[in-house]
Image 1 (cartoon, rainbow, N blue to C red):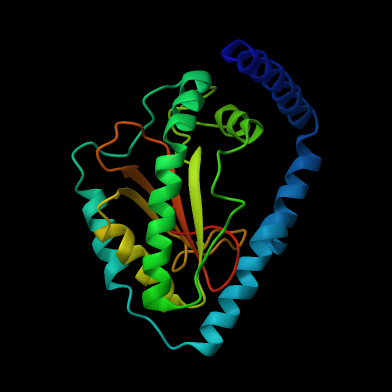
Image 2 (image 1 turned 90 degrees about the horizontal axis):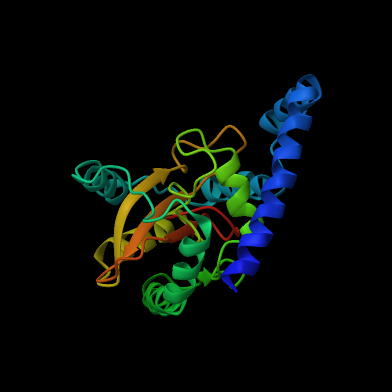
Length: 231
């Protein structure tokens, strides 16, 4: 099976390299497309933009104390920015498969707790599975810090919490921080600092407590939208 995965990765990497060469040969067209996406948003990110507008309109909530506390704790970690144990995709993916059920059970337990406190919070079934290999290769190809390596791909195992309000988003982040199953090691506050394409969420990287495997991303999405978040 590992040999089959290796063969698939080799083929994907070749296609990705062809794509990069095509981009380099057509840089003007590609830049125009990038500018359009930056200015107008794209697909899923547009959902975040609409959800953000709805949340700001219906809810006067601006207490992000928990977010700042989590950011501070992550910045104080002596280990610094977390990395995967392997730069090679094959062993990393194999170990991600081993911890998937443990991660899924922990995420589902936290989801039940969040629903009791905050009501209508969804746990996206489409995100509660391994990241597609093609997307992993895409990230390794375009990585600046770790080119053609998977050291910085921290969301092979992931989940997505879809929240109805800003208060619920912050609440899910608090539950993640207090969880006996997860340890938050990095957070991107893309709600108060949305990306140029409009992504608005808390994107959090976590470790499974008591487990040396480092693959998890928990997305606490914004305001009933399906995407981005505590991960």
